[in-house]
Image 1 (cartoon, helix red, strand yellow):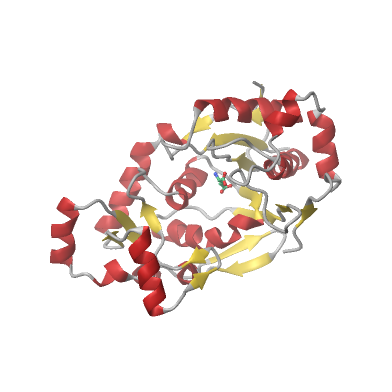
Image 2 (tube, rainbow, N blue to C red):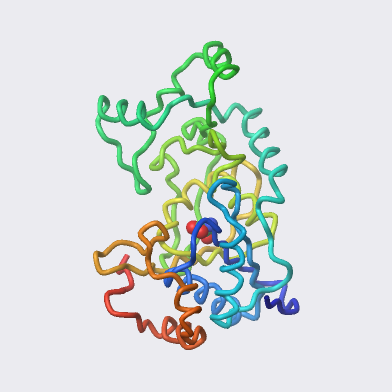
Length: 296
Ligand code: GLU
């Protein structure tokens, strides 16, 4: 495991993998992007392990992440951060949003959501199907009674939240100035049924807590930034600058993914490939056969 001394106050970047599978070439590309961005600016790169999903996160994946980064020749600054050690802060923020009247309990299962979608017509957002708002329309007394008996998630009432937030702009260093449109993603879940917090809430809180000035990550997370920008406004958090880099695609034109078993870095590492050489090839956009960089 490697860790460097602290360098500059100005630029603070993070690499934030989820240890729910082995990292693949897409992650190596993202890690190099974050590392190079930081080093070119004499900044500080934090490593944050996003292990809020207690079922899918595994210690062996954390070990593999640390070994992969070392193998690629990528060092980070300071101690590794674990989201699982910060659950109280997420719960506190969710409570604050609930007290502001911006969250409502949702009792929908995947299957009744699909049924509602069928009935009301498909609503596709930039990040997948949009929640049709079924539980937003429940009256409060009814929802309170059900809440005591049924498992539920908590969703953000985006329309209501937008009444409290204005000037939702952010700057992407590759894609230019952006106007957030959180409604395009619908009422996202901030506290899932089976997890203490969602990705959206945890990542937004932690980027502020860790003093991240520049968020360097894949363009597959660009749509999420609409929601993160809204959460920053609601929770009085600073707005970092963004750099969404293009992601790697497989031979079918799909994003590389852990679930599709895209070749893992751990396998290449154990086969004796040279990780630093691989990182340098990725930096020059030289990819294995079948892998391409998305055009956006
Ligand atoms: N933990 C997220 C993932 O592995 C990335 C978070 C982010 O960069 O915002 O996909």
